[in-house]
Image (cartoon, rainbow, N blue to C red; front, side):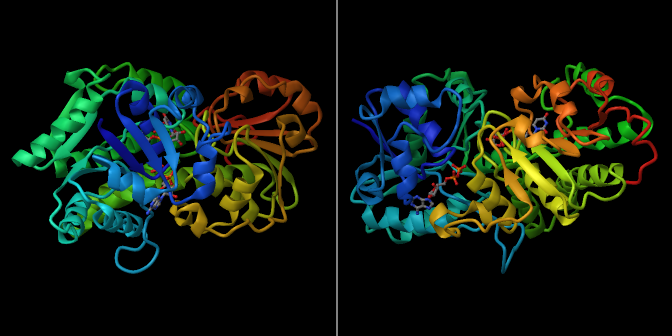
Amino acid sequence: MVKICCIGAGYVGGPTMAVIALKCPEIEVAVVDISVPRINAWNSDQLPIFEPGLDEVVKQCRGKNLFFSTDVEKHVSEADIVFVSVNTPTKTCGLGAGKAADLTYWESAARMIADVSKSSKIVVEKSTVPVKTAEAIEKILTHNSKGISFQILSNPEFLAEGTAIINLLNPDRVLIGGRETLKGKEAIQMLEDVYAHWVPKDRIICTNLWSAELSKLAANAFLAQRISSVNAMSALCEATGADITQVSYAVGKDARIGPKFLNASVGFGGSCFQKDILNLVYICECNGLPVVANYWKQVIKLNDYQKTRFVNQVVSSMFNTVADKKITVLGFAFKKDTGDTRESPAIDVCKGLLGDKAQLSIYDPQVSEDQIKRDLSMSKFDWDHPAHLQPPSPIAIEKVRVVRDAYEATKDAHALCILTEWEEFRTLDYKRIYENMQKPAFVFDGRNIVNVKRLRKIGFIVYSIGKPLDAWHHGKPE
Ligand code: UDX
Ligand code: ADP
């Protein structure tokens, strides 16, 4: 029986292994993590991550051929294939600070694999890593191997949160990179056989190691670039009276461009886009390509600009001051259908509003109060370290209240900001909300989900990203 072990029971490792277990009943899959609470949660009815469809998959396999454990060494030593899906934070000090990936957790995982292994293994990079990580890992493993043979593969994950299970069950492609030696090819074949249980052969792409690693960074950079492009247009739309929804639709109808990923927003978030682009920028700089590095850097700059622009719009519309005004924030997750807040644009927007002394009342259907306060008190890049290395409890934030209901959140508010596109925010009773708010009542829609005309008819002053401004907002400085 083939045994698989995945180190890191996070957003990538958990769902990916659950689907492998579901589709390969004859393979035993163990997901291991150093975090005891995380593993306990995977073994309970309250999984540590919210992901549509995940509960059902886990329930079907857990205890049969899917196991969650903190006994990292035992499961690694028994496995034929070891996936590594541990944190890869951005460095905050030293060489490459603010850009390069910190491979501390990766390196310690690799050293542990070498230490406990008594038989040959295939080691698969799953978490986002900068190009050439495999080479470093290969060196650590072979120099510590005690004669055991290790083959390194890169098998980047393309799942998007909120649709992870659908993406895993029906991937656009599975990418496997490996060495072009006989042993390397055998390892690629072994992993290909796992995916071939449910993925059509023509969707499994085999490449060399570096191409696989770079393809992941390139795919995310292209996706993020689309959003920054449409967000750049949204600023121009507001300035000229065009409507970004109409522009996106017209542009996306060109078959060469396509309609997906053209929604203007308050900015992209998530654990991958910014980190991957920073990695890309760093690699370009290290390879003497400053012009290419600057090109990709602009995607992040534009994203930061979009968040700042949003905060400025709120403050300038409300007579240039939000000090002690109650501002409701609807949505804190980085996108709908996930409880994940990593790099969520809501964090920067809330920090910006707090900087102007606003009182915030925050509601998100999936994000806990603890997480929101943690995010608002954390420094940039600190989120990407294992939970046990983070402060045990968040500091209280004086001007932030987290509530469990949108109506309570908006009561007596001066303004509401929609920062995540949760479906339930589309169908709120905005008339009721308007009646319970201070006047003039403002809506700032950072996701273009409200019906602007209808809300204006109710009496709201509405700003919606990239939409023609109403008379109130016209001529306001950025
Ligand atoms: C991304 C990639 O899509 C996935 O392939 C990779 O494996 C991990 O990174 P994820 O971060 O989970 O996935 O979510 P994604 O759907 O890509 O959204 C990222 C951000 O872009 C979100 O904040 C989302 O709200 C924003 N977005 C997306 C827009 O602002 N507009 C769009 O049109 C699409
Ligand atoms: P991703 O989105 O890539 O899945 P997460 O942060 O959700 O990232 O998950 C990474 C997981 O890896 C965390 O649960 C963390 O505790 C775990 N981890 C980090 N280092 C190690 C290690 N050396 N051994 C086992 N687990 C680890």
